[in-house]
Image (cartoon, rainbow, N blue to C red):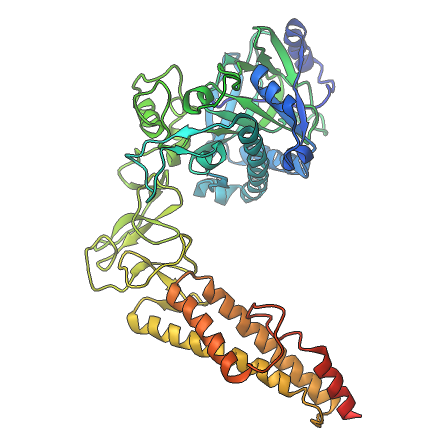
Length: 562
């Protein structure tokens, strides 16, 4: 289950809470987590000891992560404030030792954290903002960790080609990094409240996660009561079981570090070229929250993509997760609390309430009119997509929408984009998103509008070359312009050239090939007509072409003015 919790830093006295935790700590001993510098991981110099640590212990700490301590402290403090002001938004669970855990969660798609629901967004804006910064940083560090795994283990993930949504679907993902960029992962924020308990009890008993691995940041501890004006960091209360079966207390090396811990799912869903593989059983671990303490924690469980095929499973991962949600026995334990806490991750479930619509692994309340219906469309192409597909959004489609079957539409009028993300696109596909030309109201949703946009782009290219020609003429030797008039004219023409140049660049970046062709042809025609005999520029960027004109021309102008 995704209820893993970790703390950090040396002990600071909290009297009774510390005594309770110390009894467990002394009984189990301590474990030093293998540590690797983020700067080394960033440049691929983690060394062979990295592989050894993953194989033997199954967990590593990445140290020296820039800004982590600040972002983690800020996000977790706002988490506590959010829970204090809006406790009803949190899902509550009573733990084995009588402690209470309060949770809010949201998925991360690939490396992109998905927003919390509207209640969290409206009631806790500071937490939403701070947590997004922390989640983005975790994505960056996790990407470096995945790259190290790819270098040291050469992992591959087999795919179920029958459900693949891509045009050219290979039988396996080439690397684990690529595979997880197509997957949904689970982000949990926990607030633990230590209640009255037996000193020997663990808040969460030893267990192994069924995901691939989990990324966790140092927890933040504070006294429950307000008698003390200073929040204190206390002993970790995080315990692991080594590969030899010994149970020890583990601690973060610093508050600027993250722990990556292998789950049992890695050996099921990921294949390796050699027998030297990450710890097959995953890492059994447990948590202890002292009586009278509040513990704020954040972690991300990494899961396989839905089309991943396991070594012993008869179904792909998407089917396996769905069956687990339905309570069908397909494995030993639920993946990332999906079975234990489905309400907490409604956005990750395909079974939405009757008044909601499922799209991109989330349930949405849609306010469509009687002549409209909700559909799930791609954020990049505007075409209707599988609700489980990455990067989709729900819209209300009308009578001219992509699901209506109308054949006279030039593009999908229900959706418009300023850039196609899947390469160059041809116009005229009624299911394709309409293109936005520079301004949000300039939607080229009709043939005549698109044609006008192409023609206008062509002449804009010629006009840009005309501006370059005019600026060169300003430097003609003997041209009698006062210094002030020359400076004003040069400033206006330079600014106009930069403006229209960047506009052409943005048009080219739409990835609509007729508009891209209009940019290139317009600039070429303008250059042939006006600037063929001019000095060859060092660059070919329309925004900056000719902005730094030949220095010799300006020298001649100065000499002619004398």
